[in-house]
View 1 (tube, rainbow, N blue to C red):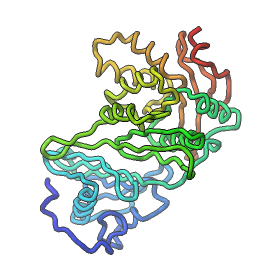
View 2: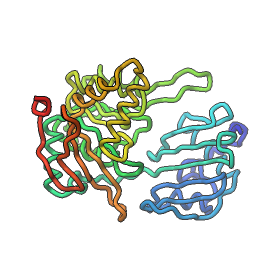
View 3: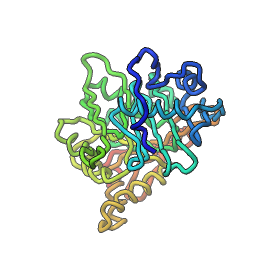
View 4: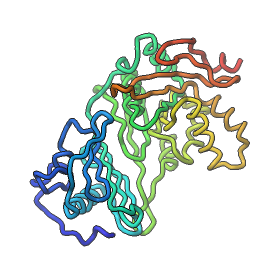
Length: 339
């Protein structure tokens, strides 16, 4: 299924969000609803919305409208969909994130998800009670290497943006590397630098790909005080670990995991996948020596994003300093943890 044959429209006054041209359609209304967190199209026609974690069916969208939206929006983003490239991730003009899959990969019809970009900025203080927040401030101020872990939509990116806002206020130069640019720390004039680097998919002829690993190597040459990887999911984990362990203190990343223990396991499996000759015990030891703290964030049944746990890797395993949102230990330096 190629979208290249679809007609183009030149009157941008008809487009409020990307390429939507049916002003009164359920699809357009959902995209323009500020209360919606995510718009989903299922099986090429069903429109669903996510509001605070709750999915609701809204109606159906015409296939021609959906195809036109994808063709126009992806063209603006420099991406494309066709039989040879049936899956795509893209950042829209307003910062929203789009993921689309078309037949034959999507067997029952086009599958589309658009995660709305929120300009809401949260303070670190909103994620936990004051004693926990004091620990988080120490983690940042003392330049500990931090992994933020959590399930999907738990607030990892929002929390990391809040942390980076504090780091920028201290005058740090931060190089942030992401598949799709989502980190949005607040920056005051005269404060530190935030350099955003975004990966790029290969073109139709197989050229032009820029991976997170490529960007991470470049970031090391841009005089960073801190290196931030939006989410570790591939070979870049090895370079990030080396960076954390060779003078780039205060680096940060996120990891999709249901607990700090799961985060270490996931990171070790990523390293093993890309360095199969590296003994797993050595991988775990290297991760423990490179990562100073794992901060777990969760979404509560009420829809709030909060810090639930903070652990520190030590020579004896993982040591808890925050559990279920309550401080139950003291923060240790790297030397103390490996004395």
